[in-house]
Length: 102
Ligand SMILES: [Zn+2]
Image (cartoon, rainbow, N blue to C red; front, side):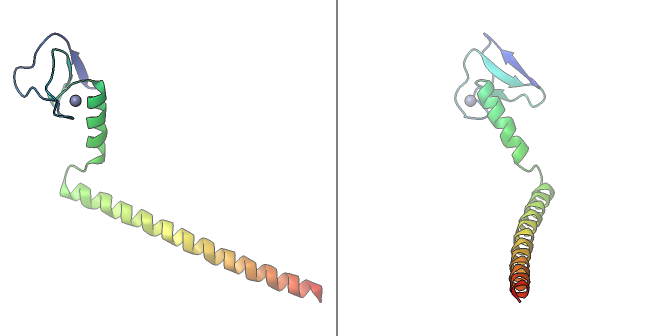
């Protein structure tokens, strides 16, 4: 946790919540390193969760998109291989049951 709860002290400047843009009251949450202010812990948590999901640079955005594309390709390949295996097993069962009758 890198925030502090400020009580009974009005912010001097930039007196709006960094998450919901509502004006801050006499108590608010302040991010220690970024110096951003939030109206309460819920707004702080919401903003930090969004910061984790949002890429910080174009390179990171490309890396995230590449990872997502690779992941979806793997999902498609696993679905394809699963259906191929099912077809193969169905044919194998059909052949063995037909062969077993004779
Ligand atoms: Zn807020």
